[in-house]
Length: 365
Ligand SMILES: [Mg+2]
Image 1: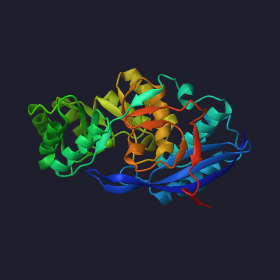
Image 2: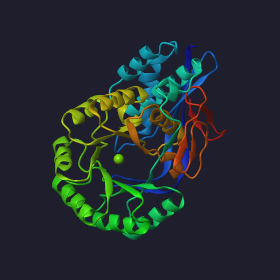
Image 3: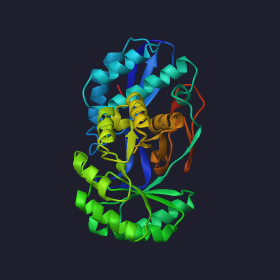
Image 4: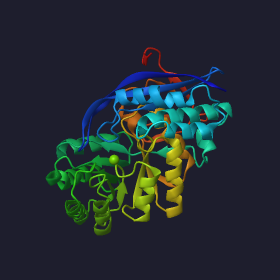
């Protein structure tokens, strides 16, 4: 099975409601779709979102990286030489982790199709179903309380609440959400780098004193401030999860070795795809550090790849794959089934994606 063509397209999927964090506000998913075609007529699918404020990857950069570097590195090569292909993707260009992730997942997709095995089974096959949280955007407290009640009404029992847009309001926001949903709902919070280390400890301790029962806090301080991250980990009772601080497997190793965080958030778009995500998961197994699997604002092709990984590996104990359920529609055919919080992986070979609804993809040729 030889790679004959790399085709790129764009998809646009409206969100149900605007997505707001301490870093940005967005009202639709605008992703690049990568198709890797072969002489056997099969297609491997990948997807990458332009998340400039986190990865630095814009639509133009993703398209350029795939067309000018990553695609050329794998063209005319045999899908069965997977190890060689995956290395070529990573070595073809520095940074550009979203573009690499899209092509990397498409190669795993083709390899699974070639050998008639779903990717989640190829990688370990721990389970078929996972349960995701859902994100509550950062807004005035009463609006967040309403959104949280709506989410519980849709069957979610774990909320990921965005905070940090105005730190003075954060305790109030969380109190409103906790009052709205009661004590049985799991609440994790994500500050998206918004706090300073001492401020983070002060806010987290205030939340604990009020009995808000936060499961963990995600990325309380700046991505590069590893000392600050460790300070929060050491001085707060709330477990700390590193997100923007961990891109590569090397980042993850450094954080685990120095105990700068309690938990690691794996995202395919940060680490450059399933191949590097597997390395992070393996390192985490060695260190006994549980992982969350997360996504950016992504449609179902790339989130589906993350589902395959989550279903393969038990060290991934927390799931934040709400991209598709935040969308108002799903133009992707095949792949995992998302029933609100419950996600069931596909048993089709590869990643199980059959394509995009006709007319929904704008090809870049
Ligand atoms: Mg995060």
